[in-house]
Image (cartoon, rainbow, N blue to C red; front, side, top):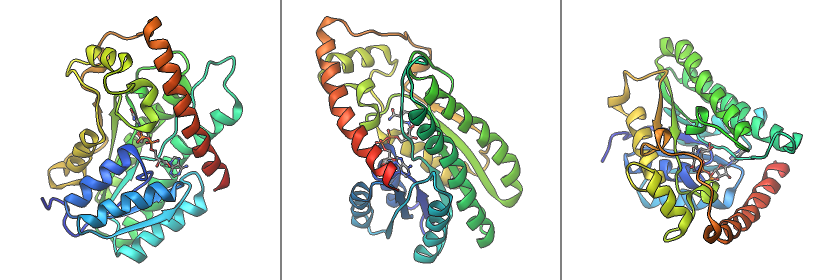
Length: 288
Ligand SMILES: NC(=O)c1ccc[n+]([C@@H]2O[C@H](COP(=O)([O-])OP(=O)(O)OC[C@H]3O[C@@H](n4cnc5c(N)ncnc54)[C@H](O)[C@@H]3O)[C@@H](O)[C@H]2O)c1
């Protein structure tokens, strides 16, 4: 496949999950990949997958919420890989909690990464695109949570709803410069971030989710990567300002599942595992 031969893609947060799946797919289509991420260990693993496909990769330790760091990353992408044609503003975190309890730090960190980080990523990379004069494609990863929300998830939803609206304005501003801008709203995708919702293969949480999802399975990063490839490739040229949900039909399905007795222990075990990862990620975030 060579949909994107000779192109360079800047994929934030490609050190894990959906971003890694996107990096792999765009590399398979012929693009070289720049990987700005706070987690250089994860980013190096993704870079290996890219080089195994015969493409060049460039890892840059970057906190997308820092204007200095993301400006530097976009500039280095052009210096090291020679171009910047595709941007995927994918880096994100999830910090949930009830309104009576959510800490200001969790609220602020989530706004900084999910909203300000997307703005700064698009600004820095679009400035490079305009300078290079080749136009470009921008894809922002929002969420199904941009329109569905509920207990403990409203703060995350607010950031994703913001992304959804920013994209529409950016499409107006950047279209005349040859740059398209779109957003994707993934449903539950099997990644470390969504482990508590997706459960584990063979578990009660997973089978309940599969049961409530019309297509009968949980999503995977390759599903989202296929849509990014469309938006970034020749066939996506007429799409701009769009927000496309990819959730296996979950949006209109039965909501509000609460685990029964048998799943409580399973959920607590998965939550404990997620908490270990969350703490490691928080340390990386606070250090950068
Ligand atoms: N997994 C899902 O079900 C799901 C659903 C809807 C939307 N999303 C969105 O998809 C995107 C990717 O999520 P994922 O599930 O792959 O998560 P993930 O936790 O597996 O990966 C996120 C990546 O972003 C990086 N990152 C976090 N903060 C960063 C920062 N400040 N600067 C740079 N890099 C940073 C992490 O190090 C990690 O490599 C996020 O924006 C998330 O909100 C995920």
